[in-house]
Image 1 (cartoon, rainbow, N blue to C red):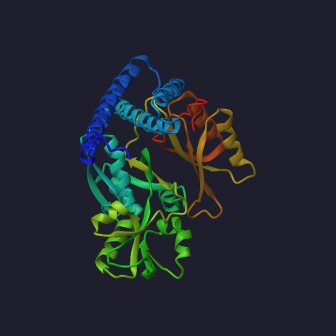
Image 2: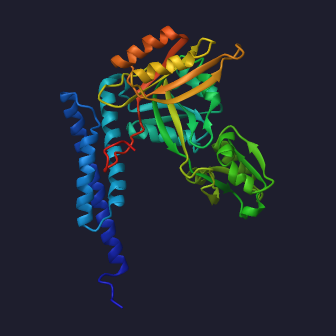
Length: 393
């Protein structure tokens, strides 16, 4: 048997040295991407260039293979690096377009206490903007909006849809009646665990605390547990707090493992969601809309009510199709007080200021009984480029 060339401590020291070098190079690359953004302001070129990204990936894959690195490994790493570069450039360009937003500290309202998924989404969103937070916990979605409406918070963060449980209807209903604008979005990974405070076994658990959404998102696993009592809370943070205070061997909370540490909870079971790829899309609202530069991918969200006759909605959707505007979301909600009348929420991949979007709004205004733009904001969903075809995955 061949003796190792280095001791384990020496190997770990070398690994740490290489890791530190990688971090320095990533930081240097990120700063160069900022110089790219400055250059694109002068040339009016968009942030994303699929042809350039495809050529870059193909070259990196070829170089990686010569170093005994497989194509999937190289592609996965550089998809992440490219995503970071795009979002970093977007944040810079948005600050130029919205100089009044250049504030080092922002007051942000969200559902639940520290450690809730809304709190995690808030931190992730504003960390990319290099903005420090004053965190304002709220007990209901309505309170999140109201805190911003009366000026006690600069922004509110609200979950709007989940890949497993679907749309959060309460938030859509509240958007019908607010004067706030959607100014941003973020897709937050949701990693549900069973968390307990006492030294216990999984089979001893008979009561689970959490917000209704996690219960729904983990319904298949909960069904496999048999006769489980599901106790609903205003947030995952409240659920974790209750379980921490009870310290009983038969109770557990559904929540994030890292957040559970804040309450002294230990994971009993990880990855319990119905879908392994479980994400919640959060929207960010503010009192004033933002300007979205034409150099970055943008989304526009609007709400509309159509005439109560056959084909009315189809006519509206044909406007988007004929103008080649991609619709990413269509949600219907009942209009409170008007039985059988629906309000439609539409997300499209288009900048509100573009000619094609203005043409679409003009046509939709003619076809609908009511229409309102809820916001135009930078798209945070950076789809990776397929190195083989050059298409977005």
